Length: 209
Image (cartoon, rainbow, N blue to C red; front, side, top):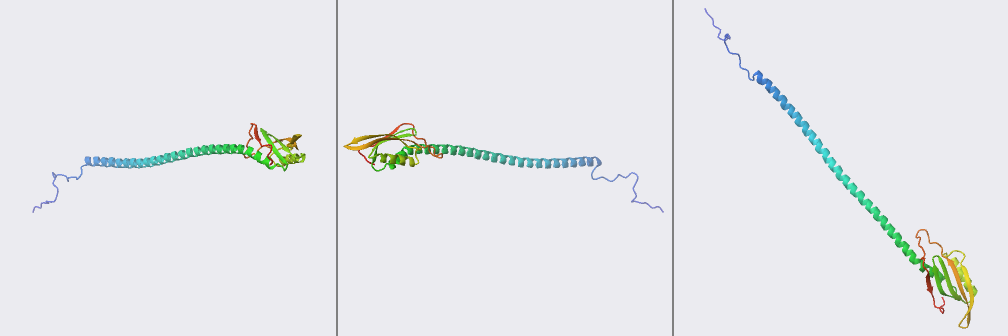
């Protein structure tokens, strides 16, 4: 009896077909590696781009802050210069004001120092030197006047009586006198200067102060 095995492979049968040929498999692996490399490079580029953008933003913000600080520093310098200028102007105004007050203070001091029985004829000021001419009913009134000027705090010690002459005014004997005084320097804070020019103030001979 003859048996035939139909499942056996015949010597001339074709081999089983592969899903992906060996040559294409190598190409696919290379393509995958190329894509993976491209993805890595793309990710690295994106990361670097993000970092660069962030650094650039911080640099821009720092430059803007620096510009703002430079502008603020410039304003501070301008305000400082303006403040110094205003301070100098105020100081000048104060010196001028003090200089204008000096003659007024002088006249007020001399006027307050006049005793009873004495009147003034003329006040002359040259620099710090002040000379007062007048008449008095007695030598005692002249002496009192000089002492009051000396104790006023406006003049140096001593206040000098230059001359005393006897005169007759409307049949009344009087003493014609001249008194010289040196004004003290002004306080250091205001530092006013007395006018250098001669200042004269005349009073009527018949006026008694």
